[in-house]
Image (cartoon, rainbow, N blue to C red):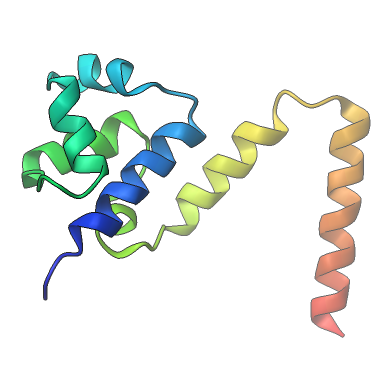
Length: 108
């Protein structure tokens, strides 16, 4: 199986941006220089397996997301929970109602 380093880099950049992190912040956390991370994110450099695992840890995701573009259900659950937690009780009730409605639609 051949790894698409361009797609891998785009997923790394996307996840970093979803978390609101700048490249230099990630570089400090994984101990690589800025240019190297930039090259990885643009598909010009291939990260080692060790670096992929470090990025997964720092960016709170799984290797299958970076390598294959798939994410585990747990990752989605954590992402949803992190977005709902700071919301007001009223917004949480609205979201709960939406979930209930979607569930009812799927069951019919």
